[in-house]
Amino acid sequence: MSAFFMMHGIALCGKVQEEHGEETGVRISEISRRTNMSMPAVSQMLNSLESKGLVVRSMTKNDRRAVFVSLTPTGKALLEEAREDLFATMEEVERRMGKEETDQLIQLSTRLFDIMDEMRNQKKSEGKGESTR
Image 1 (cartoon, rainbow, N blue to C red):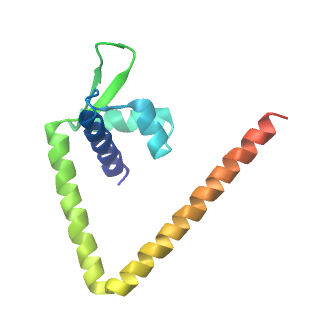
Image 2: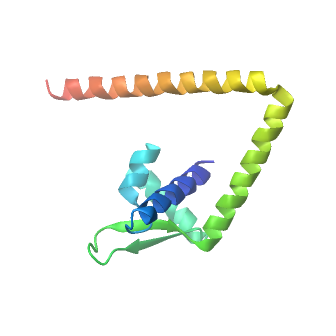
């Protein structure tokens, strides 16, 4: 699942950058920030995805230090297949649960994630306050 979300994030960032005429792909630091994963964890997952031929790393002409990651054609195809499977699964879940219960689940899940995000941000800000003392 984490590989799916990482590949999805890489695809979205690349699409946004293409629309703005920027370099395609996404910086490893951006992946780390968006996924809340450490740089070593991101690098480890990218190594795995790269060894499977799903992503490729490249440098820009302007800044040889900046490494960008983008999906390979194989990675794009696999991501699209995974998306289709996910949508089919969600449609079946909604069919079995019914629209009302599915909507309730989504609302409660959203509330749960908002609370967890708030708690994480609060913990981060409390940690910063302690380090300045």
